[in-house]
Image (cartoon, rainbow, N blue to C red; front, side, top):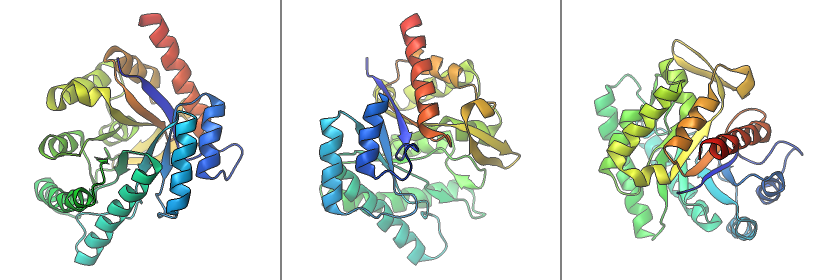
Amino acid sequence: MSKLLFGTAGSPRNPSNLSTVDGIKRIAELGLDCLEIEFVQGIRMSKETAQQVAAVAANRAIKLSVHAPYFINLNAREPEKVIASQSRLIQSARIASLCGARDIAFHAAFYMGDSPEKVYDTVKKHLAEVLKRLSDEKIEVTMRPEVMGKISQFGTLDELLDLSSEMNSVAPCIDFAHWHARTGKYNSYEESSGVLAKIKKRLGKSALDNMHIHVAGIAYGNKGELNHLNLEDSDFKYAELLRALNDFQVGGLLICESPNLEDDARLLQTTYTNLHNKHG
């Protein structure tokens, strides 16, 4: 059985303003397992720092992933914005590879008033160009478009499963809080199990063995996500999700995005461990 690892989106908050290297050390001190390096406001890590990050993470057996900048829209109207978006993905992958991280989560696109079918084709075309560049550079990573929380954003579960089934080196980043916020549903054991069963059917058991998951409390309205909350301040039934993840023997990285990062990450880890020990 593949192991499910628990960690934070960026360095833990306490103490504040930790570097990525110190954040990895803190993750290990907390007994957590992984860290998603956040390049969401831009990529500002040198090759030398990336190599140091890789060494420290390997030494402490902390698995890493990367979140690419928010400023990505593969369906942008202006060609220069598409090119800039592709460049940010490529640069994220380059640095991720140096850090020893294989998974790059990213927000793929906005619909911009276009039909979902048209946007799908556009995203697929521009993402294929990114993958070609990375292949030419012999950079082996998995690009993970994220399930998005707003109805204006490309990134439904089915869209990402279609992309992942049709493209090599693409797999979904399943943000269960986003999917709950976007649909107003998917907040029970049965619904979470349904998501996992669909992933297994479409992409195979190997996709469940190596998932990249985001979890947080979340506030939402009729257009979807509003903002992240701490788990206990939201209606998100995280224990039911964790039970489904355990029953489907899911492995990979579970990244907590709650405002209180490491506190909710440890809550998720402890709850999952108790469930696993009780039910096997």
